[in-house]
Image (cartoon, rainbow, N blue to C red; front, side, top):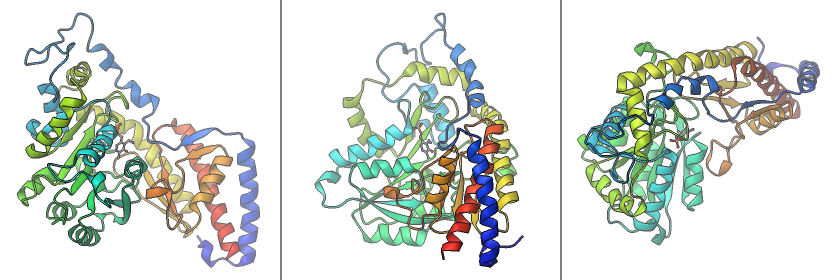
Length: 429
Ligand code: PMP
């Protein structure tokens, strides 16, 4: 396999001719495929269908403390739901508040509350000249949209397979009191599928922030979302709340989770785990905000999953559907691009994404070419704050939604676009 960068101009020109032809043929097929968002497929949604039957008009709709779930009340969530989400989050139910249907909503709400009312008695962020967040990159576009929406300045922090660059995080957080938070997807990260190492988690827990209201936004969206059943093939993540408490920083972290990609996205249940002091602070706000979240949905989830074993068994069924898709995309990338020196990609053991790094300056072009050929990808740049990828090289591949035959076609289109964009770039140099 010859690297593209080692090819002569003549070789590149001949290759371009061939690729132009392939691209034209693909376009002529009039494809309409989508590899853009991390949505579960129809087959995955179908495995949760029995959840629609666990409640019926004849079900006793009281929770275990006897409260009628059809009525108002129980602001924190019913105890059995706190236990279930506590198990998923690996924290004691005492440290959990159950919210509504979306953890992203809880994150937005958390930033919003900090802006208007401050964190545990500290000055509301809206009264400060400057508020900044650290953003490990590439990262989750919707996190960055939240901080952008509130006018919070975002600072890129490079990611490695071990997690964010902790030298940089430690330095910035300890020196700058305007830094109030950091967005983290610590397990099977979006988009690389990386899991923070034990050392990274310990360094997070030991941070010495200049701002007393600095918080780690620990979005554990993919905590049980393994692609493989064998534990040896699963990533392990150290529990952060416990580590923070041990390090004398019990209040430094908010841990978010939801059942979105366990049951039904948009109709799951979300939870926040944090120290007692943080939760007490937040409860003052929730009491004004709502009379209570959807307890019937909480009950439905508990009756369906029962406990963590039930969740794991269910996730194994998700994995059986997702695994061949990931493996097929990775095999296609390896077969078509391996050794060419025009792209690198991650091979995650869980989560929803594969992260692709093209040659510098090619990502936008690849995504545009794919679109023209009928394959929608996540917009290039979306994985960076303000939509600005400084190297224009990162592309997020989301293999979950399309049926595998469509995904196969889409992956083949993608590799042709990568090759063509790379050849054009080299010819232009
Ligand atoms: N966090 C991450 C890292 C995600 O990838 C997603 C969904 N794509 C969410 C949060 C959204 O979660 P929810 O449905 O609970 O709002």
